[in-house]
Image (cartoon, rainbow, N blue to C red; front, side, top):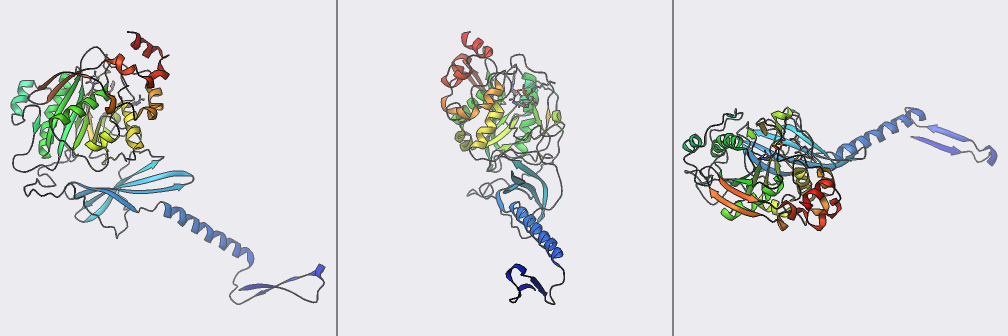
Length: 430
Ligand code: UDH
Ligand code: NGS
């Protein structure tokens, strides 16, 4: 203990400070200053650390062989940057292992690198999402389908339609299938946007049917082909497939699937977890790395009510690019988290091809993405217009041939700000 005192017999001008040091005062004042500084720094570090402590668990899903995925979310500010963190955790034989983390700044997600650091506290209890693992029906398929191998090599040979039909004779007309011996836990439909890619479609279906059957899914495949006469519009084809699929069956989960992506791991479950999922995380074309954090293109999985809630894809993107970025913004602006399984699982091979002639890059796509928010409510499922020219239940898929009136779609008040753009002017005057 140190104390300071003033001698009473000294004039005020000569007031003298005297210092008494008790036996506990083991250091002089300069040491004390340093000690205080260290203590304050330690407290500050602990405070910042606490902001980033992994506390809130959500979205726990079993997705293969006794392995659980769970998002562990935390929010906080470090050096003024708002951060969110998610951990991807595997539970194998009762042991929790963290595979990697997603750090998100300002609501965007970055790809994660696989690492084996243990991030969970030892007293964490993992509870499995019972919405997909229990049911009244006693004959439910097992939550872990038997016979999954993990890494698989896609077959890139283009078999003829006749060969494929014979090979997958148990598939019902319209491309529907369900396990015979048990009731599937997942009622899923796959929507494929399509134009002039016959060979890609044959290759994809040759890979997809056996893949989905091994996963014991109750599924249907819908190929939405855009008729000639308008620039390709991937977003609208997704919306149309979504609407038309629901006319056929009461699906609960939709998977939007580019025709040129082939899965390389059969543990990549084609179902919808609690949050929207970006499935094509690691593609060979990008060296198995996610090109950018908010990417939500290629293949995505959403629950039907989530797709309705975000008003679907935008309709106004004709030509290549941007519609998936707009969709990504829609999903996140509704408060959903875009989730991703580990890159080892969400692995794809892309069938090599060049840019399609009828799908040139859209020159206004960047402006459209920048102003996307203003159209979330007015442009999408809510106002879509198309003509269903033909619908056929083909042996391996349902074929929807649709006509899109490009001029009509773009002639709306919310596109007024782009009317001076030569590309758009050209379309509108044609
Ligand atoms: N699609 C068609 N027909 C088209 C255009 C697009 O079916 O004419 C569909 C198809 O499902 C495709 C998806 O829309 O997978 C996405 O279109 P894309 O494959 O053109 O876009 P992505 O960004 O590839 O996947 C761009 C071409 C990269 C060329 C690189 C050349 N080295
Ligand atoms: C972005 C595009 C996305 C596209 C992504 C990956 O630049 O639509 O590249 O493309 N966004 C815009 O153009 C605004 S890829 O390399 O797969 O061809 O999905």
